[in-house]
Image (cartoon, rainbow over all chains, first blue to last red; front, side, top):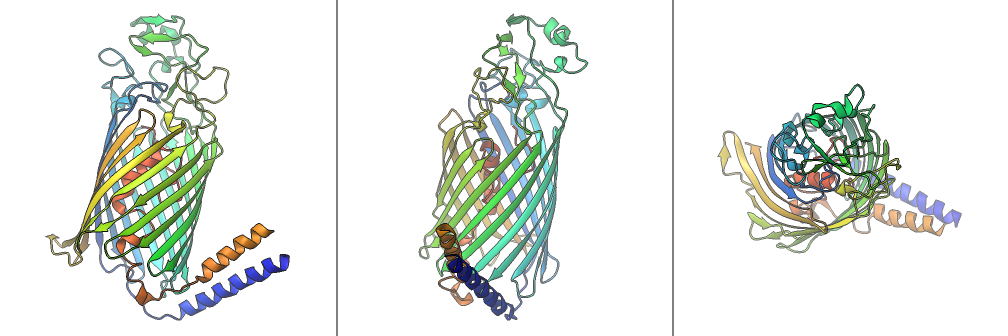
Length: 437
Length: 70
């Protein structure tokens, strides 16, 4: 049996080597990217639900987000491409606004407040560079990214190597990325006086407002000492043309995260602590506490089948697990339907489910004696269904122009996402591709 | 051991590809809808999923960076 394994391994190796040698003899060289391309991507996202993590698993999750991104790909020569990706995302969030629910009107977890935390802007800049070998069978790439928002800063860098062989029927890739993130931690307003050097219950928040319920309010609170979050990932990919109409891929991503993985402004209410209120808002018993490390593994596969000139079937499946106790399955199906040379419709369906994290406790079910707890329903057990529909316009002759750029394609899509909890969302996306003439 | 034989045998077959599709036969494979990745305009949808769902990765999307906490 051992010999059989060795023979099979040797066979694979020599077959692979032969294919690489054969492919290297191909002398035809085409520019990797003929001319500069610009993608303008935008989206408008809305969500709502009744399980806001900011207010301990109960309260409005209403949020809107508008995003605009430019992706510019510039051919530096026949082999190299530089891509600049710049994006801005502006959001307003009713749940985040309740980091301080006492800034106007009657405080209530189901109503938005108007303070500084009710909105923010996320900005991102990513530069990537790729180099292709003369025979186009080896591709190296490197990237650097920076993103920032009021309470969070992230810098990331990474690289990848892709090898094509078997007459470009097979592709193997490996990638690695590192993200070094830093929080500027913001805590729920009522907990801040209980931090180091705070004046506790003598703070004006409590002297100028009446505490109802348990008037001896004494939360469990200490600021996080470490405000860094680092993510390290490595990914492996294999794609294969299986037939002149079918191709598939397998990929594995392994991620290790360290540092502050809790979100500092997410409240938790314990079942063994009496409730305190100001107006209609329950004062936090604590903020969520999650382990300082997380190990994630995702294994995914795609299979695309060109059925005929009108229909293509696109499928995706992923199994995910991590050491916080979450297991998840994702499956999606998209069936592009070409109406003509220029117009294609994109109906799609996506199913997702996950088990709960070991540290998830709904509103008022965690005990104050636990080490770790969260009431973030994104870490709860749930399943979701997403239906989508899109249309795209393609003009390979780029007849419509804006300055020196010809319009190559327009994509419009709409997705409706619903969990089997109260959470639901929808997103409209638009993408415009221009090519420099 | 049998497991190893099956795995290596599978990959051996996969790597050597039962059918080698020539460049001139790749018209359908090169169709934009056959790309083994999400369309660019779906990027913000993937970002939304990575913020709202525990599972990330193995889909060509981001695997880290950013808090996704709102």
